[in-house]
Image (cartoon, rainbow, N blue to C red; front, side):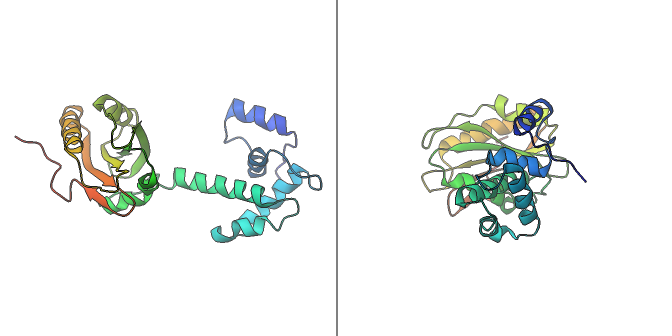
Length: 221
């Protein structure tokens, strides 16, 4: 039987020293909640929360957590939010990308932002996602991209290819002249670096624009 360290400050110290892979699941919940209630100590509450998580469907987690004594709406939402954040941050890992639509579910959350985000998706030789990076956040309809930032990430991760993606806060996902020129510059750099750009995808809340699907991913001879 695994032993839970009931000394919450000690959990914090060891997590900082050894990393977040150190704590047990119950201890991670203790870190998320910070404290229990007057009736239920944090260590007991965390054990009960893990039991509920083990047997709850995703859409019932908040409701089931609130049935635990001492767990109100705020604590239930905090745990559910932590689970959702972890899911969003890791679900793309090793996902194969074969078409532009395959990447959309992993970047669609950026479509509602009022600022333009430029993303670089690094992929291995099998065109599976290594990581999704935001390399630039600009003001409305304007962001600055330099090949150095784009390919530095790909080199560090030994990526075989990348996909470019950014959102258009305006709601019109058609590329601007700046988008086309930026893509052309990055394509030129990709030939030098030997890291292929598979596509540049622009997203808004409802639609997307793929440079590949519109035959725009090319260089003039």
